[in-house]
Image 1 (cartoon, one colour):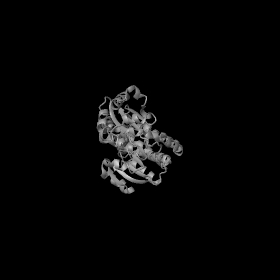
Image 2 (cartoon, one colour):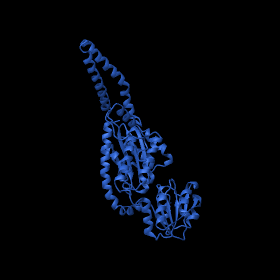
Image 3 (spheres, one colour):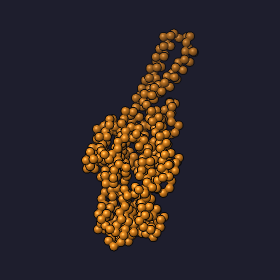
Image 4 (cartoon, helix red, strand yellow):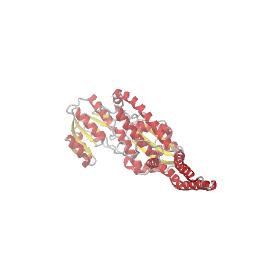
Length: 429
């Protein structure tokens, strides 16, 4: 366990443009395939994939460094030449990789610092790795601690307060372009981005006129919330002729909004928050269409974060405290140290009982008998502890090993955490 190599290979909005991230992104409905492909790479013991609109990262735990093999995999997956791809990737190892995960979960590495969506996205990524059996003791431990760190950051700072998010930045961009009062909105998709965008636009005076989704049934809740008409994607062209602003954020792998769908006699703002993009690039060539994509929001995001940046400094200090706690905890899981303390505790009991026996019968029994009892009790305890100590190492490698080890420490009164160790998703759920 202690010899495992923790690595992250990835890119984000700071290192690559939208088109690159689109090529690198992983379709959620095929994540099991990608996870299993990486898991069978030589040396890889555990893997998790985080793929969002602003980042693509692969976390591995391996017997030896595998970052070059992961880059090979990403190059093949994205069809981007390795030499070009390497310039847009970062590689983080060991505690730096753990620190990066803590910062991502706490929204310190997001385009919009403090935005709440990333924590849900990283939880989903982790759940996929658990469901498809590609995570193990190390990833489980890192993610549990990362969720705890995010919870502490949220409770002890104001980093997530206020309405700053990608969806909010999209509303601000629309507000720069037109007076939002009375503008009719079409939302394509019903995810968190769409919900937030609709809320912000409605609060700014817009009317949510249509909610479109591939599965109409899934759109009814959002439609009812805003008293909007719910439609299927086959009716997009008709709806596009009646709205002023479109917000779209689906998980489609192909563009949903094509040039031939757009009206030519009226101005429309299209805000595409999806990755891969939901819009055909040909929309850029239409004079009456103002297309906004994720990278267009960077300037607005940066100007909206002055307050949060101050809070981020406080959050960074918290992250360092949590990293120290993580390191101390991992150190406490040292196999040799746990076995040593367990045997010391048992030996203390044996010696105390042997001393009591000597006081009672020392004058009545020969030294040979006393020595024989000493050897017999030592042998007895060694044999009794043989199977448990052999299994401790197995427990440490088990996905739920932390709880097993914590239970063992408490049973035998070995130093243990004051806080209960919880199952995978109970922490900050």
